[in-house]
Length: 368
Image (cartoon, rainbow, N blue to C red; front, side):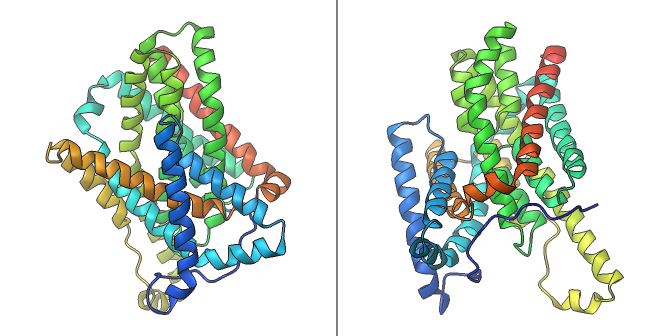
């Protein structure tokens, strides 16, 4: 059941373009250029310091620019100018990046974890997502908000949030909820880089268990690498493979969510006597096409049909697309407004992070 609306983040009210072509090109080009420049800046920083996370940097840059710009009327007008191109970049850049992400995953690598490791991953993902939905209901937050936050913490941060948004928000009405979820996985994932390696020492976990715990609970791939790398090279290997196992679950979860949302929309239309209107409107695929593309990319990579050079190009391209798209989404976040009114959403993020960390640790201690 949907509760009262979550705190809404301030964002420009300019119309969202369907594409940056034809008449919309004049309105879209400032945003497209801004996102491209931001992607170049973030990619350059990542090249200089590889341990820096491209999605985290891009999102932080977008949030910083957007928050500072809103402090002055001229800056607010500038945000309105870049909104159209930014919205197009956020939608299509993220979805294309998710498809390319599939080329970085190989099922034989994931299966090498064995049934114990895979069970740890499955239990952590399902418990984190389900628990976040329950906490969101208790906090009386909209289900979409809880689903986006839960998916981000359960699977793989920014990519998971954007993929789930594409499935549950076909009308693009929850950009601010997605931006809040992205900010939360960035904040708590960054904290995990410092806290988890310290806890590994306190708890006396071996390299295998430490890598399994970090890989099953930390959000972004770069955050997993940073946290596990601080423990040992052996822990880093286990953590990386465990993280890939979580990412493989992205497509099934997004597909299930897409089917559920499509059925819910149809039932609502029939109940309202709007079947004819729904049939004439824009049809939404039950399973988002980019999720199908992601799964197809995983299969192709697993068959060994993708040369290593192609994988490297795909990885670099997806990083650039994620950087541009997440910078655009970060522009929609007013950090001051989030701090002032977003207490319930922040509490949900803290609960989701706590669930992922504690459930993964418990599962590792029992099965690892």
